[in-house]
Every structure is written in structure tokens, then in C-alpha cells.
Amino acid sequence: LTDFTGKPTDALRNAGALASDLIRPTVRLGVTGLARAGKTVFITSIVHNLLHGGRLPFFDPMAQGRIVRVYLEPQPDDDVPRFAYEDHLAAMTGADRDWPESTRHISELRLTIEYEPEAFWRRQLGPARLHIDIVDYPGEWLLDLALLDMSYETWSRLALEMAERPERAQAAAPFRRFLREVDPSGAQEEAQAREGAQLFTDYLRASRDAALGLVATPGRFLLPGQFEGTPAVTFCPLPPPEGQKPGRGTLWAMMDRRFESYKSAVVRPFFRDHFARLDRQIVLVDVLSALANGAQAMAEVERALARILECFNPGAKSWLELVLGRRIDRVLFAATKADHVHSESHDRLEAILRHMVRAASGRAEGAGADVDAVALAAVRATREAEVRQGGEPLPTVVGCPRAGEQVGGESFDGTREAAIFPGDLPADPAAALAPDFTLTDASGGEFAFVRFRPPKLQRGALGELPPLPHIRLDRALNFLIGDRIA
Ligand code: GDP
Image 1 (spheres, rainbow, N blue to C red):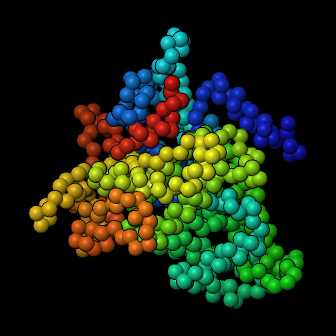
Image 2 (cartoon, helix red, strand yellow):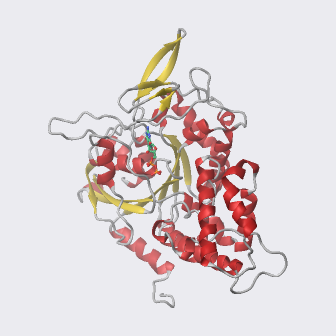
Image 3 (tube, rainbow, N blue to C red):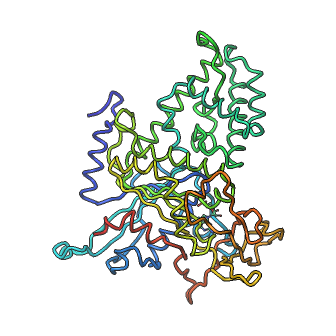
């Protein structure tokens, strides 16, 4: 059961994983989402809350008092960086409290939960143990699955069509200038490949920053991780030449080869070695920022979510279907940063997200996975207050905007609080996706998403931190792992 390189085949590897699970029950929990969705903050907060007995009334095993002990252990995979939990926690809770550095590559952390089993006969054997291996990775990497079925020519055509759209004209201008000057049939030149890759990456970044290019591939161009500077990420789309394809030694052939390397050396190993081993998945989505950025941004997020969900039900003909060892049987979509809106809006936020994934989640459910949606704040940075405006009560949130944030024309330095009314989320979730929908602030102007500092926590007598405050984190945990602590 080894392939010709002497490595164990996928079947053997999966059988091995299942066998070791019988001895030591393990849940591999994937945490993903597009850049800045809130993955790092989410993992730091669930770990801190579980380790320090946080308030988790809707996490059944905790509510039932069956959790005996929770601790960190060395992770099982030596070739994956460890999630820097301690550093991230220190960043959020230190004297200069600020948000931690975001996810840039894959990382992992093992948490072990010791608990009293529910069944009487199992309790006689003493506490049971469950390992939770949390795997953090950029959602952008999931978008690459679609590339596996494409040739360089097809991908080039699609990527160039996208770059020609009017709303991207500005972001794509330097790259398109480069395209006008190169000859795909000319001799291959490393300098040209590098320049093209750089300009193409700049274009992807600029359109992402304008909240337009979220569904851009290759997913690693913005977060190359260990592949930075390698030929596998040094290519760009070129206009397909008419007639016969340019032969060896041409720029076209060089780019084509690198595109194939990207698929075989970067994309496939990720899906085979990491994605295919997950049991449960949470997909974090920054719905509020997208709402504040307008209808195009919402449509783009919706598209990205549909693409991400395709990975959970790739279809019988897909290569991924063949390597999927175990099945992801639960997928939770979470609208993050819910502390930016008043609790009156939390259910509406949840409904909007549910609406955004409705079509795609039907497909995942067809593949046997349970899909749900929740609105949460991994770390609650605000409190609620009612402010009167013109005699009307306005449900606002109060927090400390980060230095440099602007609220209603006023500039903040990170030391003062502000009360913010982020506008009413629509009761009908479909309205939030309508092309003319805009979120308005208290004065009827366009709502701008403010970044707050993490909350200031009152340490105990011995300097110990209280568990990080959150919103609905316990519901998320219950859906993701509650049934496995039985
Ligand atoms: P990642 O790129 O998915 O790892 O995203 P991060 O976890 O680094 O979060 C990105 C940013 O979102 C942070 O720097 C915070 O500004 C903000 N953020 C994330 N989670 C929360 C939350 O629960 N509450 C608030 N108020 N802000 C959050």
C-alpha cells in the first residue's frame, strides 16, 4: 500500500488516522474564512474560554458540569507550525492591548478535554478524553480547488476577462499595460515572469482592498507562506495566442508549466494532507464589513462562500472526492464581530448569513453534512447603551475606537470611547443583498465600519485574566464539538 515513491497511499494514511482515533478520540476542527474574517481572534478566544472556564451556558457539556479538565498538548503534526496562542492572547490583553497578527498560513493547536461521559457504564471507567486539533488556514486557499480542473489557457481567459471589468479598471491598469507589452510567443525570460507575477499580485491586492476581488485565484498569491519567491507562485495569466500554442522555450510555455506546478506542488498537497483530514469546519465571514462596503461587496462575499462550499461536496468526478478520507459532517458559518451591532440585531445578522449560503448549503447537506449559521463575537469589545436622539431611543454599542479611527468626522486616539449606531439591519435578509441596499448611520449617512480596541479586562487579585468576553461562542462550540463530548 505504498506508491512508487515509497510514501503511504492516501488509503493507508486514512486507515491509520481512523485506527489512532479509536484509541485516542480526536476531532480535527478546521477554522477558515477570508483574510481578516476573524480566525485568529476566534481560535484564541475559544481556547482561552475552554482553558479558563469561560461563561459558556449553551455549550452542553459545560452547562451539565461534565468538563473535568481542559489543557493544551503538543500537536500531532510536526510539519505544521503551531498556532501562536500565547502570543495572540498577550497581544489582546497586554498593557497596549490590540488585535493579534492575522492568519497568514496554516497552523495547528491541540486541546485536550477530559470529561465525565453521559452513559452510566462509561462513567465507571473514569473520565474520558477527547483531543481537539484546531487547524487554522486561509479561506483563500479553498478557492484554488477550482483550478485543478482548469488548463492554463482556460484560467488565463477567465482571469483576463475579470481584469477587464469596468469596476476593476483602475486596479488592473498597470498589469494590463504589462500585457500589452509582452509577447507570449517570445523567448521565456525570468525577469518578465517576475514582473508579470508582481503586477498581477498587486492587482489582486488592490481589488481585494476595494472589496471586489475576493474570489481571486491563485489563492496563494496574496498569502504565499513557504512558497514565497518560488517559481510555483511566479506566473500570471497571458492572452492565449491564436492558432497553435507556442512551443518550448516561450514565455507562454514557461507560465503554463508554472501554473501546473502550482497545482501539483501547492494546491493538491494542501487538500490531500490537510483539508481531507478535517472532521468539522467553521467558516468565518465578516458580513458586517461587507454590508458597510455596499452591494458589490456583499455579492462578492456570497460568491466566495459558494465557492468555498463546493469543497465540501466536490462531486463524484472530482479528484478531491477521491482523496477525501473522512467526511466533514458539520459545517458552521459564522458572521463574526457581532459586537459591532446591538443584540437586537444579532438574529437578523444570523438570518442574513443563512440567506447568503442558502443555495450552496443545500449541496453540502446533500453530501451528508449538517450546515448551520450563527452570528458571534469571539471577543466582545463593546457594551450596549441606549442613546436618545431627537427624543428617539437609539440602540448603540459603546467601545474604544483604535487610534486613527474616524467616527462621524471625529478622529480618535485610542483612549476615548464612542457610542456608535451602526444602522438597522433589515428584517428581511434578502433586502441586505439587494443592489440598492446601504447601511446608514444615525444621521442617515453611509455607515463606516469602525475598528474598536479589544476590551480592557479587570484582572483578579493574583493578576489572573478573566475568560475573554464573547457573544454566542458557546453555541458555535456546541454545534462543532458538543456531540463528541457525550
Ligand atoms: P484573520 O485574518 O481571519 O485571522 O482575522 P483576525 O482574527 O486577525 O481578525 C481581523 C480583525 O478583525 C482583528 O484585527 C479585529 O480588528 C477584528 N476582529 C476579529 N474578531 C473580532 C471580534 O470578535 N470583535 C471585534 N470587535 N473585532 C474583531
